[in-house]
Length: 235
Picture 1: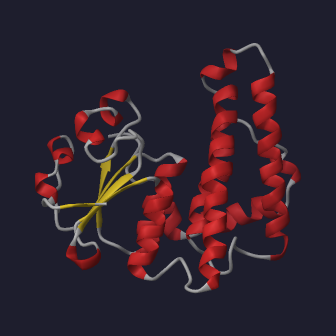
Picture 2: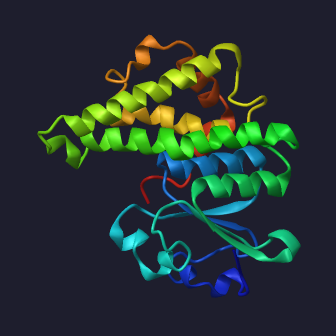
């Protein structure tokens, strides 16, 4: 969607002022979904300004942030130089990745190959991220205090199934869909998150071969290493 006012007039700038209102503004935090966008921006070499938006209600449920993302989730982005010179507002990490790829003509091929990238991007958005996140909730966060084992077992089984899909797909290829793409930028940060959630053993990560090697290739990229720390976790 578009807005008709300059970034300097947008309500979000009352809380996160733009030092360079003529460039892309990223509002994010270094979670798996957040770093998708910072990694993409680094890979693409785009100029941008990163604003640290914590996961606290004080930030993501503030009127200022809700003026950009009514769904109160990071990441979100404003591009003052969108198609036709329009200012573009975006939320949802997958939508932002598609936008940046189409804006630059990079990290997503044209023609039929484009849809190979998009199907794996949607695999992450609809499966890998939500299922890993739910398992993390029932292992590391408040859900760990729930005595009923069935929720945890449900998400454990689904996480293992999804990893098996990845392991098989990566058995004869370096990246998810041809060349390195936004599909990889979406998927790999969630594989990295398994360690942070403390669930690598319970999903059988160490018994896999191709998925761990894939994550290592991803993490070896300099732009990935930069993007993983943007914006900095501590202000």
